[in-house]
Image (tube, rainbow, N blue to C red; front, side, top):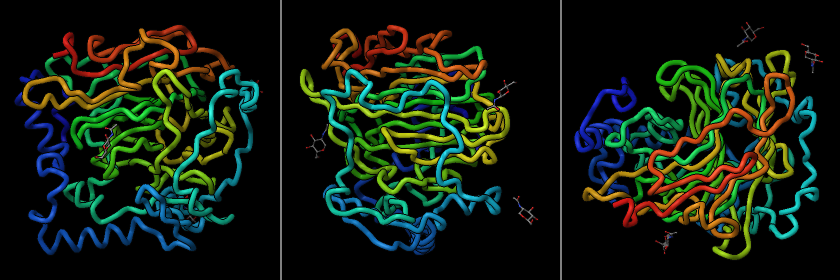
Length: 416
Ligand SMILES: *[C@@H]1O[C@H](CO)[C@@H](O)[C@H](O)[C@H]1NC(C)=O
Ligand SMILES: *[C@@H]1O[C@H](CO)[C@@H](O)[C@H](O)[C@H]1NC(C)=O
Ligand SMILES: *[C@@H]1O[C@H](CO)[C@@H](O)[C@H](O)[C@H]1NC(C)=O
């Protein structure tokens, strides 16, 4: 579908909301609670088929206290290998190389002394055996919320930080640091974990990184991961780990987590889409999670590996991308929320901790230990970065080189 929301045409806010929401987020128009009215038999059948396709046979299933079911699926039968370009793919159980200069030694990190390591509630109730990976089971209601099954787990409109939209067009709001102007072969970032309030189920609030190449609306390739509250996608307001990728500017390829084929997971301890805990406390204990991404075989067409905390989590095979099979042209870090302007007012959906960056340590959300692997294949802090802040009165960002504070409460006297 053409995406008028990203086309740069001038729309009044009201017209655009109606149009974009109806066509691009069809789910939102129908509400998320009452889902049984608009589905006929054919759609119900589609949903059943889709569930069968999404949920692979499990060797073991674990019921999480938060209501999720985690299926332990044979690693060789994971969704990735349905991808037409991965038919002959040999799974890589570990990265063939680690980037020079990346320090994975968590104990070297000053802040880690006081920080608890992240965990996921499902692990209270079991473990996935070796040779399997944990996959969050998709429920019928997850698909019903998505309006129709093919929408499930996919972004359908522009989702990279951009300042090109005029203020009256903003649905996505960003407070982001963007590094461009070179080739990039990796990045690292430590993301502060909070549980931002979201006003409506169809709004989300996230903290993530993006590595991108190509042109927006055309051949944009992205690798993305982070943490998000997305009630519409997951059915609750927990903060959850996620990944995303696309090879065609969010049109036909890519998805969240392991919902489609492509991303290869090798780790049996972390489930994408599952809740991440503990959350940070305002003026109290801070919790954070580290993401590392790097291209192995940097001179050739190597896969993009991701390490989360101290675990090699998995990889985006180079062959699923067109432009990113070579290198990225930007690395971005920060927060994004959806602001639906209900009743003509700015949303109260929070970004980060819900507090402005001026409040600083312990109170505002941070990204720290920012690094990129640059065109010289050297690990370095951001050097060509600029901020993208759609509305600093609602959500702001204060940059200090290799770290920043960001976020805000949304609606407030200066952001009506
Ligand atoms: C997989 O291998 C077969 C047999 O060698 C070959 O014909 C086919 O093109 C390969 N597919 C891919 C996607 O590389
Ligand atoms: C999440 O939802 C629960 C139950 O509806 C509610 O009590 C809680 O305040 C919500 N949390 C946030 C951060 O909005
Ligand atoms: C990549 O190529 C450069 C020269 O272009 C070489 O110096 C370097 O050793 C190569 N790196 C690897 C990992 O092969």
